[in-house]
Amino acid sequence: MTHLKFRAALLAIVFLAMIAFPWVNGNFAAWPDLASAENRALADAPSLAMDSLDSFPKLYDRYYTDHFPMRFRAINLFAHLQYHAFNTSPIPERALIGRDGWLFMEGNEQNAYTGKFRFSPEELESLKQELEYRNDYIAKRGGKFYFMIVPTKNVVYADKMPLSVHPSSPKSWGELINDHLRSNSNVRVIDMYPTMRAHSSDEMLYFKLDNHWNERGAFYAAQEMLRVLQADFPMLTPPLATDYAVKSSIAQTGNISRMFGLEVDLQDSMIEMRPRGGFRAQVAPKVPYPSVKGFPYPDDFENDLVTSDTTKPSLLLFSDSFGHQIFPTLAEHFSRSVKIFDCWQYKLNPNIVTHERADIVVLMMLEGNLRNIFEFQSHLKPED
Image 1 (tube, rainbow, N blue to C red):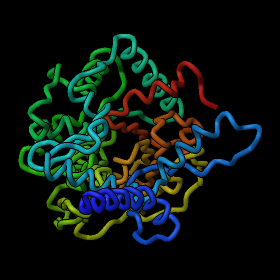
Image 2: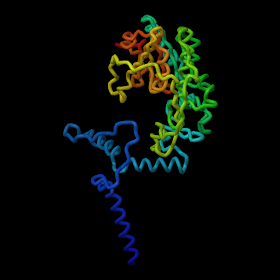
Image 3: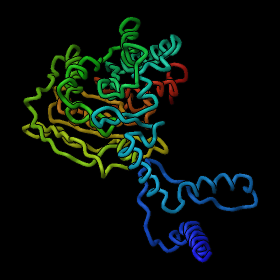
């Protein structure tokens, strides 16, 4: 009987230690937690007030869920178990594991590849009308407008997708939209799909652990963009790959591996491409244009580069985070280049268009974000 009492006492002690550990560790920090790997602000502690008692339980629950002791170590342990033991995504609703260690975004980037939630005829018409409105608006201010869709990594590297994923259409969201615009509109389209697919067969154009293209992918995109622009602006010459020095390295990086909590465990290839004579385009003072309220990267809202070649046209590029890699290469070929990252709104931004009066205005959108444009349609409600 003695050993049974001992086992019962030991079990009680272990149980009490387990339920007491979060409080003890939270107050004395005996074992520090890991830093948050989530790309968002964690919930703040709510204030208890008589006029907000109804909302307090929900707000406190959200706060405690974000801050309970050892939360991120537990998440990290779960991620390791899922990834290394079962080769399964720890957050399947946000990202998935492909073949040969490639990681892909879920959601609309995946839908763009599979053809799920394809654009309806009404949506295609609305998109066409919006782009035509912008085309006319910019033309009245002396510029030419171009529309460019950045293919998702899921589409370009379909051969790395899991075998369980099957597209319902031979063409992705962006390809169908490009076809529709070419057949039914006068909007100038810069089609990146043939270029990306042609080079992806023997070169890495996107990161394995991140949804963005690398500098090589961005270079080929800039090369194709300039080739299309050259038809209207003969003084533009697409760069040659031989004009650039390429440096490869290995690094612990990647926004998807960071979401998994495995950034320090996994490695990706890094590509740096630099003009052999150095970049000619230099940073210029910002106007500055007011950033979007609440934009988490306000310093990236506006970027300005200039060269000394005043014979070249000016460029205004509206883009998302994919613009970061392509902008330095593009800016080498223009007198003045301005890149606007407007918090994934992809608006016309008439104040910027009117102030810049750029010769060339390009709207560059990631394929998975195409429906964002419906939130700010100037042809329905002109922007101030």
